[in-house]
Image (cartoon, rainbow, N blue to C red; front, side, top):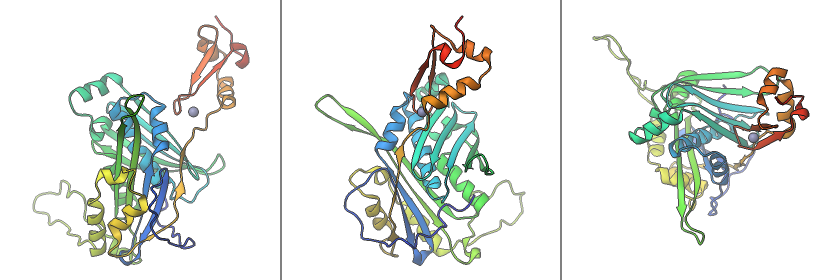
Length: 339
Ligand SMILES: [Zn+2]
């Protein structure tokens, strides 16, 4: 995969930080003095719409929200036409997450999980991301259409969070020192018609991209099972990266989702000392690509037997797994026969 933050945005002038918070936007930035590039993702209505389309248990919704932030963070940086798909497949209570980003800014997402195992995890107080996912892998696919080859990057999931997986991916596959933070929360508000809630999500990605590649060495996250007596290979990390990483580690979850704090203010708060340029953001929205025509074409591609078996109470009903839109067909519309 090409480095998501490597493409410079030099054609866009930097500007003063906006005081107006804006949701559903990805804001790139650059800290030239430290060779750092990054982006801040802020999701309001988009993530609320995606998560409210499903009636997932709260920890599953939160986990899917994190996957949405990560996908948007990576997908929006790829200068491609087409889709960027992030998908987990694991042995935990949440067996699959799929987030589908279509350039330049459409996103949809869904999860598959075992209801009883998720309920048990919640009851046991073990419903954090790592416990819900379990072990397996995370795949990132770039799909630029039927005539283009698909690119896939893979990273193992081993009981850790999506942030851990992202760090591992950039460390092993891209050799780019990278820090990712993801945050998702429900905001509760008292209103005239009772309390309401809405989902908010945010994240920050920081990457160290020095011109001299030898400066990008990072210490291994874990020394592993080196035999006793082996001298560990000590890597001295570049001071610029140590500083950047330390700054990102100070970000509180609430800062990533605070509706009163703009992405630009957050970036300035973190990096005003070394100096930072903030670039124009790109907008995002929750939108599914399903349609009655697509569903009809899919049904017609099924075997006669399969179509006939889908008829229930004299009709065929199909619900989109991404957006929960429901499409109902008379059997004869799609060449099926009722029993
Ligand atoms: Zn849909």
